[in-house]
Length: 97
Image (cartoon, rainbow, N blue to C red):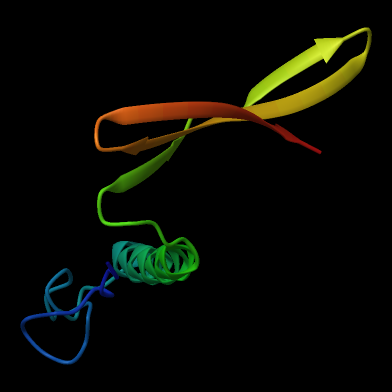
């Protein structure tokens, strides 16, 4: 499922609904414009990731937090991946290098 970029119901400028027309636009206007642009970039990244991961309609994949472990001065990283389908859930630990 793709997420759409921010669009305004009031016009072609996506920022029209957040920033009313005014001759008193200041730093807040610039900040809100930058935030809208960042949201659009994040949405594009989410959509590209979503397109790269395909699972069946009744399957879910979840990732836990990255775990950092240091033993004798050597640091390793791992993450737990859990796949669920039809009430059956299986997990595996992925070691990251």
